[in-house]
Length: 208
Picture 1 (cartoon, helix red, strand yellow):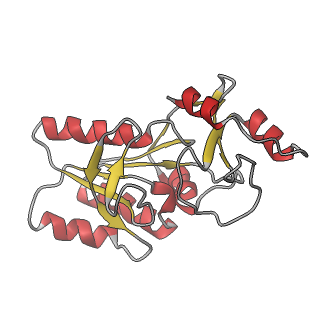
Picture 2 (cartoon, one colour):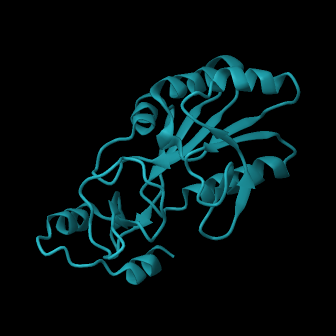
């Protein structure tokens, strides 16, 4: 039976790189893939999956109105699809996760979803929460805190490197806006009364 996989991590854990490697592996064996990425994530261009190590691929952008089950059925009318891969899966709605589960269960196509587990306040994204509940397989990808421990949290910072405690859940950015930290150092930064600027260069090297 085809399975729904959720590969989750904090920022800078190589989620997109892992997706692009999986896509290459499928295509190298003559198999057909269908790639999706969130329309809101346009840092490197609309409908582009990109990684920090320079890999990229075109993908079909999705938004809140995308009907995955219907789109996959339409795609099957014109070509074979052996695997579906979804980048930035935290932006999926719960209903869309159910649609992807249906693709696995009734169309027999595996779905690999890659995304963040929590936002900069430590709260689950809607899509991530649904995937944690419904996925057949959960795979944690590892990122590294500046202290060397496993990073599990995403700290949002301002232009001066100060921790941000409030704001919209979705704000696209890279190492200039987010730092992957272990829970201990995440809480220390959030609770730091003096709000000392973060060593962005050090943190970036730690994630390289």
